Length: 267
Image 1 (cartoon, rainbow, N blue to C red):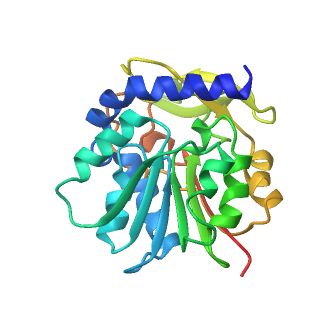
Image 2: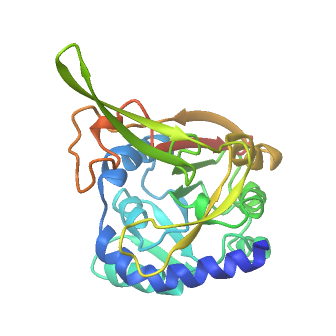
């Protein structure tokens, strides 16, 4: 599928899924509260008055958390429906958030936000939803102030992609019944575009763009960024099972479902 067609399909899917997603995600889930946000907050180092760009903000979950820390937030998403929910959820809170409908793959549109206008940028679990990421990295190189960080979280491309299967085997080991939980990985190096379901029951499958690390991080390096932090958070061994026995839970505590990076514009 051509990138322009993939981008339009993705936008339509997220507009169709917006209400369902907002209802289910609300103000956060275990992925956000345990794996992502504590690390994102620490790597960003948000302080009062800091200007932060929240990229592909969805229903504004991270935007509101940034504003609560005192940041001045410009937040955007290419789904107009998502931005509508973000504005509704943010109406009653104190904080400085400017929500916009903007496409992260449109380099010219991104640059209208203002060169060197931001102290930092954030993208939480969204880069794999973008048909292209090179325009975003090139734009951020100019949107961020010298030394400014871009902190992003993504599904870990090694362990949490459309090419990974959660598996369990039960066996009798010398009179003891043992269940072993492991993963099958059947594709990694080749970038791919796949239909996927972020939350079971959502109205429309969306496209997920799998990129190995050399492609994901390479987009930043090619745009002139350096990287000074990388975290692979995993759920602790005792984390509750949740709805699905083979879902992300404590059984898979040795496998990180999320990758978090901090890249930085040279100072």
